Amino acid sequence: MSIFEAFILGLVQGLTEYLPVSSSGHLQIAKELLGVQLTDNIAFDVILHLATVLSTIVVLWSAVRRLFTGFFSFRKGPDMTYALKIIASMIPVGIVGFLLKDTFNQILASDYVMLVVGAMLLLTAALLTFAQYAKPRHKEEISWGDAMIIGTAQAVATMPGLSRSGTTIATGLILGNKRSVVAEFSFLMVILPILGESLLDVLGGDLANIGVGLVPLAVGFVTAFVSGCLACRFMLNIVNRGKLVWFAAYCLVVGLVSIGSYIF
Image (cartoon, rainbow, N blue to C red; front, side):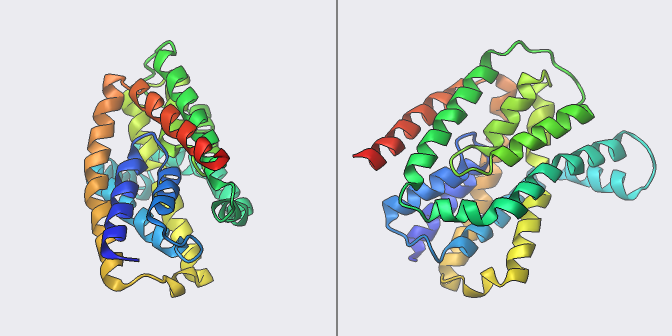
């Protein structure tokens, strides 16, 4: 992998991890366009995801610190409850990741991956459109039930091409939660699952054969981190302004193009 390819993939990962357009789907599209071999780059994808996790922690540091302080204080209170809701929301994606990780990797390496990505992007567009026009109720606090439903939505969004942030934010909005509250919850709930997946990859030896040089790896990581910080701040602002339909239109176009590239 060249430095330029690593830069492009890092940029795509950083921007699309937070924008509701599917980072996995766009990484797949970028790899196809760049002609990057897909079979030996799972570890590189993990490195890029770690960079965006770091950008989440940086941008939402005050919320992350509040979660850790509340959880490890071992005292019942709103911060402890919020931390437990975040943890509970991660259970569905942990189960799905453990049971279906190999299946998803097979899809990513298949000949019909662009068809799957395109279909999931169309589903993302539908979810964002529905959330845009759903009747707002502005619940100030995410309930236990909403946390589990949003967590289940995150588990479903492990399908390549289905936007994680788009699915979880749209689900939270449809449930009537306040925009700023559900956006923060969506970005925080992904931190531990990605770190957990990375740990499993390390223990399983997947990172032993990265297949990418140190310089391209560093370029990809730094690019994903910087663009991730910018995209995270931008997305928080966009959600508060209620402009998700812009991304629905984008996902519709890219989804149709992806399906067309497979058919024709």
